[in-house]
Image (tube, rainbow, N blue to C red; front, side, top):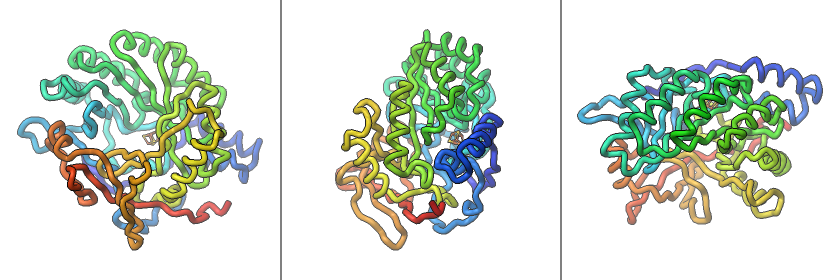
Amino acid sequence: MQCTTRSFPELISSFLKGKIAELEGSCGPESRQYKSIARQFFYNPAEKESERSHWRLRHYDADMKTGEDTEALLGVERLYRRTMLLELTTFCFSHCRWCLRSNYQRFTLRKEQIVNNIALAGSREARDTVREILITGGDPLINTQILDFALDEIARSAPNIEIIRIGTRAFSHHPKQVDNELVQMFAKHQRNFRLEIGTQINSPVEFWPESVDAMHRIQDLGITIYTQNVLLKGVNDDLETLVELYDECRRHAIEAHYLFHCVPMRGMEHHRTSVAKGLALISRLTAGGYISGRSKPTFTVMTDIGKITLYEGSILQRREKTQEAQLQSSYSLKERQAYNPGFQLPDSAEVDEQGYLTVWYPDGKDDNFWGD
Ligand code: SF4
């Protein structure tokens, strides 16, 4: 997939604009509540600064190719053994400022491209290993007709797929999208697969009544909603906010999945804490009795070779000059290339003596950028 530095225009849905205005009026522009939403969506001139040129334009390269083709297929990736990623569109209801997708080529797949991509998931090479498809984006709920078509096509040509996950921020960006038509569509496809909805909730403020109502409409179908939250400087990088956030998730039966360290994207340093701060917070959050054991996330970083959940010993060494940490993974290059022959080892990665990959990951820093 083509990947270049692009301007990522500020895009804030009318729903979010209304909520930001409400928070400004009721809590004030200096309130934690207002800032926790505004900082996620308002453009900041710091984005133009590119302090460290080795920062990424995308988080990994796992594009798929077919047969003799040297051109990567648009909208399909295979980074993990069991799961294939399908991107139907790169458009969203609102632009989350730190999102790496801002650097990706903009597209919505045509029907024949969807058919070709899904044929890969059901192919002889993939059908014994691939069990899940993660439909990500962009926001797949932005075009429900395309989503419906893709789900029908998966049922038709990839019977090995048992579980489909759909990633969306519609609950906090545009909850009206969860209308009767969408609910009926999900009810129809549930007969063929287990559907799960992955979302991202970064502030406890995002549990607006309209958002909660939309979540409940999905949950009433028996569909699980889980959340992958992003640790963001000046938004949720304190214990009190995280406790409130995960308590709200628990209250509304939203399963906690990852707490992501903010991706090392060029121009987004003002959103990224250090990894050490994330580790200190996750340790207090999950080993201090602050939240239910059923709502504990795992602290995870997205590297050039895929997600790595951090444990003791995951950080092998540091390069202070470039503020990078070398991380140990249990990904095997041999295995990765067996299921994705087009995968190439990025410059940041090496193979260790056991055949597992290690990778250099740019750290963030704990300045007081937002002046709180
Ligand atoms: S909704 Fe998802 S894909 Fe779209 S900008 Fe936000 S994080 Fe990125």
